[in-house]
Length: 473
Image (cartoon, helix red, strand yellow):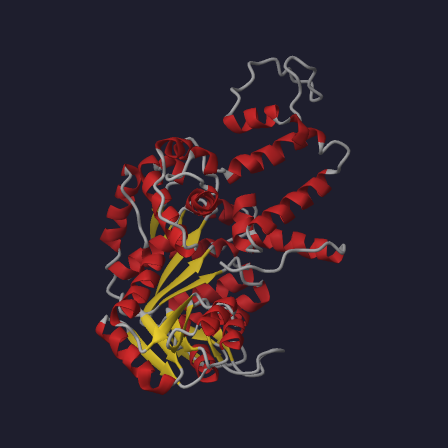
C-alpha cells in the first residue's frame, strides 16, 4: 500500500502518516495539491491519497481525472465538521476521516482499499486449477497473458500475481489500452517532454517508468494500435523506452502482464496484432473461466457485493435468500463478475424483505436479450428459405430470455415502424445512462469494443443527440 498524504493539518497529518507506516504502508508527504500533482506526473505513484479539506480538493480530483490518474481520495479535517465532510464527498472524495486520527480508523481505511483492489474468490473447481497455475508462476519474472471474457476478473488476477511475486513491494501500475484514445496512449505508456505536443505543458513520466522495479499491466492489449505495438515490443525486448519529444533512452525494470478478452491468435491471422508481440506476451497464458462455469463462486461473490453496497449506501446487511440464489445460478452472466456486481448493487437497493428476495434480482443480460431479439424475426418453420436451402427442421428449445420476449409482445410492437439504427441508438444510450456514463461498463454490457462505442457516441453528438456525460469506473 502506497499512501500519499497532502496538507499540514496542524501536525496531525504526520501522526496519520506514522500510523500508516506502522500498518505497513509506504508514505509520501506533499505540502499541497499542486506539489502532489507534480509528484504524480513525475513517477511518484500512490494507491490512495489523504487530503486536507482546506486544500483545493475539488480541483485536485478534477486534475486526477484530466491526467487519467486513477487513485481514490480520502478527505481529512480537524474534528467532525459535517458541512466539510458533505462537501468533500460531493467533490468526489471516497470517504471523510476526522482528525486527530484514530489508529483503528486509519487501519480500516487502508485495509478497505487493499481488499477492494485484491478481492479474490476462487472456490469453484474451475478456478482452483487457475489459482494453482498462478501461484506457480507468480514468483518468476515471466511475461503473462491473462485471457477471458469481459468481466471475468482479469485485473484482479493481475494484482493477485503481483502480490505473490518478488516484486510485491514495488508499484503495480495498470493502464487500460481500450479506454485511452490512440493518440494519447503512447504518451501514457512512455511519457513525454514539455512541448512535445499541443497541451504538453510539463514533463510527464510514463507508466513504464512509474512501474520501475514493479509490475505493469496492459489491460485489453488487443486494442493497442498496430503502430504503437512496434514501440511496445521494443520496450519489452530492450527494457528501455523513449519519452515522446525526447531522444534520450531510459532503462526500465518492469514485469509485463497483459490481458485480452479477444482471441489474439485470430487477431494475428487478420493482421490486427503483431505475431512477434503475441509470442512475447504469451510466455504463460492464464485463461479465466466465465462466471457461468463457476457456479460454486456465484453465491459468495453475490454476498460479498451485497455487503459492499449495503455498507456504501448505509443499508443494513442482507443475506441472499435461497430463491434469489437459485435465480442467480440460472443466469448465463454475459457480463460475468462485473454484471453480477451491478446486479447485486441494484438488488440491495430494491430489496424490501429481511433477506434479498428473488424479485429484487433483475438480470441485466435478460433485459438486453429482450431488447435485441425483436429486431429480427426468424422465418416460420417450413417456410421457403430465400437462399433456396430448406429450413425444415426442429426449432431450438426456447430459452428463458426468449420466453420473456414472447410474453412481452408490447416491447415488440413498440419497435414496429422504427429503423434498426434508431433502436440501436436508444439501446446504447439507455445502457450508458444505466451505467451512469461509464463507457467501459456500457461497452462490456453491450458486447462491443470501447472504440466502437466511442465512435457511435461521436456520431450521435454530431447528429445533435444528447449523450450522457462521462462517468467513473
